[in-house]
Length: 206
Length: 85
Image 1 (cartoon, rainbow over the protein chains, first blue to last red):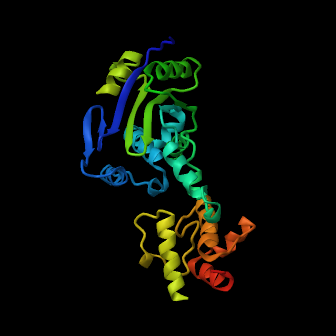
Image 2 (tube, rainbow over the protein chains, first blue to last red):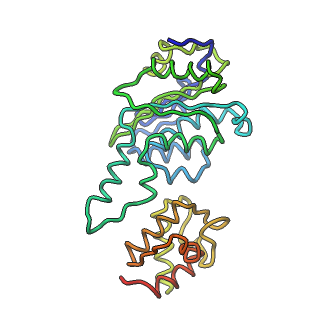
Image 3 (cartoon, one colour):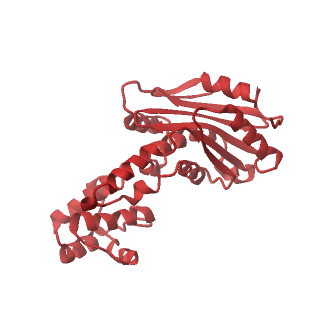
């Protein structure tokens, strides 16, 4: 396993109708379905990015979880800080893939939506984060059967050891039908939580 | 024509997911792209699909959309002249 002397500077969770950062609850709305919940969270967290409403569910989830972490870093300096993004999930872009498939299933009513089609890749959510925060950095999206702290830690350390990034946002962002979960963390020189498999797993399960 | 303009405004807001914009806040001569409603290239493709699906108008050259989608006024005039449904 590759090793570096880096730290988890901050982390965020979006799950069970809650948004939290570093274990502190930022927003909760227990009674809402995902579309209403994420819209309410967007408003409550003062996100101020109207293109959010054009995104698919996976991108909204990833975007908001990342925004919570990146808000603390001035966007004008993001390029210089070279923040890479390494995300993963299980369902890929299946939620949007199904919507696209439904729009092309009937040859007599064949009107696929370009706005849906553009989200039929899971890594598009990284693009949405990068556009908002002006990141021009390395990025990767992996599909796993389950959350893999080891793979994320190894890949992140590889980026650092090869001088491909000064900071890395890593994590898991998964959306499929009625289930969703986001866990993102920012790895840098700052912080008190060592960046390793054990700590990533611990924070994921918080 | 007035009904068609109102219909277009409502369709654009709904289909392009324009949050915090209502039918009343879109003027007939507002630019749909750039400094107006701020639509982007994917929105332009959505509008092309909408013309086909709802009004039976097929734009074979996407560049045609640049003029047709200038404003609600221009769009409504084009649809009124070319619609097949």
